[in-house]
Length: 319
Image 1 (tube, one colour):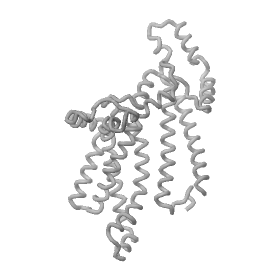
Image 2 (tube, one colour; image 1 turned 180 degrees about the vertical axis):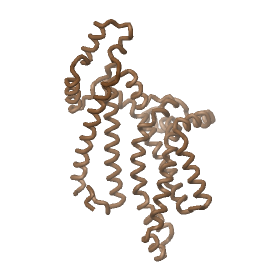
Image 3 (cartoon, helix red, strand yellow; image 1 turned 90 degrees about the vertical axis):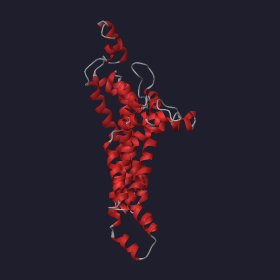
Image 4 (spheres, one colour; image 1 turned 90 degrees about the horizontal axis):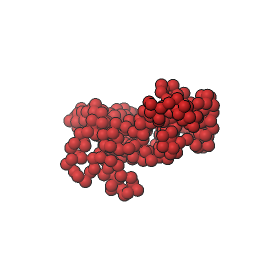
């Protein structure tokens, strides 16, 4: 199967997954007790005023009519508008997504930069003090929740180094330095636990590869140790690490909300939580669909990256 056909097949599967997720969230959010019209007007509103708001929002129509209209709008790229502010859903999500994506990308970069060297050292120095230190620190990182690490960083680094702001977010349009200075602490908070996971994954994968016959053959041929390690060993050991790193990035985006609250950042997670509390249906539905899109296309990206690292793997399991 060629790459174009494979990507087309996976894209169709992704569209189907997103459709199922969209339908599920539509049904789920309308199963939540409560009435957005009453939340907007307050508990003292009379029945006529509530009925008028429900009619204005289209909430008085049968569920299937609301569903068909919403799906028709989605097919044209219209995610609707916020019940409370009237702003377009995609605009609200785009505004809130920048800080979340910034924290996620910098966080997973920090995790990889720490974890892969640590995993290699741990595997090549097995049962030596370097191995014990690396595995111990990795276990410590996995054991600490991101929000706790965030609080510690805020109280230590944030107070000791005034150049690193401990509150709020600066858009990258304001400059790389202000952006990075605001992102580095929350990104470190979300990245360290994932660094622990990737370190352990890299160590296990490297140990498995180092015991393979072709590695023994390379040593017998007298190839330089660095060449054996990085060309023959690391390339194969990275395959499962790439898979887990891609999945972790998608999970990381979903788990940033607590860190955003610690550092006072108005990101995607806080927008979603706030919208659920207010039963702002269009924002919640649009946010969940965006998360689903990130997950399915991140999986596709990981698969393509996986095959670019190891060309022996064929598209669509034809190997």
